[in-house]
Length: 245
Picture 1 (cartoon, rainbow, N blue to C red):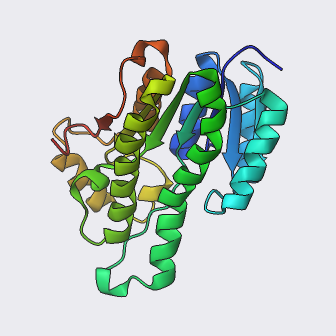
Picture 2: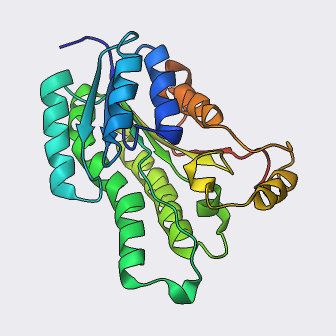
C-alpha cells in the first residue's frame, strides 16, 4: 500500500473524467478510475497514466448501491482507502418535459444524484477515521439556473448541489471538505448531438466567446483536491466562461 493519497474518479475513462484523471496523476495522486461501459478507454488511460502514478480501473454502475459497495471494497483492498472522491459519472439527455417517462426520470436521478450519494456514503467512514478527505461533485450550470428541455437533468444536478452544501456542513468537523464544480458548455461527447450552428450560438452566448474544454474543468478539480483549497467547503465553483453569472 502506498503512502500517496488516492483519488477515485467515477466515470473517469473519457471526457471530463479522463481529463481529471490526467490532472490528478500529474499532481501525484494514486488513481482509482471507475468506468461502466468504457472498458477499452479505461484500459488505454491506465496504460497512459501508469508511467506517472499507481493506477487501477474498477468497473461499476454507480446507480447500483451494491456495485458501489463492492467497488469500494476492492479499492480499499488495493489502495487502503479513498482520500479524494470525484463524483463525475453522469448522463445527459434532452427531452420535452411532457415526453419524460418514469424510466427516463429514474435513470437520470439514479445515475447523476443517487450515484454520488452511494459513493459519498462508502467513502466517508475512511475519511472520517482519517480526519481528512475531499469530495468534489461535478454538477452543471443547469443545476444552478435550470435548462429548458432538460428538466430531469437540471433537477438531478440541482440535487447534487444541495447534497454538496448540506454534506459540507455535516462533515466539516471531521476535516472533510465537500465542493462542487459546475461546468458550462464543454466540448465533450455530450455535445455530439448539437449542430455546428447550435455550438456557434452557445459560443456567442458565452462572454469569453469560446466553449469550455475538459482541461478547464480538470484544473478546477485539481485545485479543489489540493492543499491550496483546504479552507474552501460547501462551494459551487462555476466554470462556464460567464454563461451564467
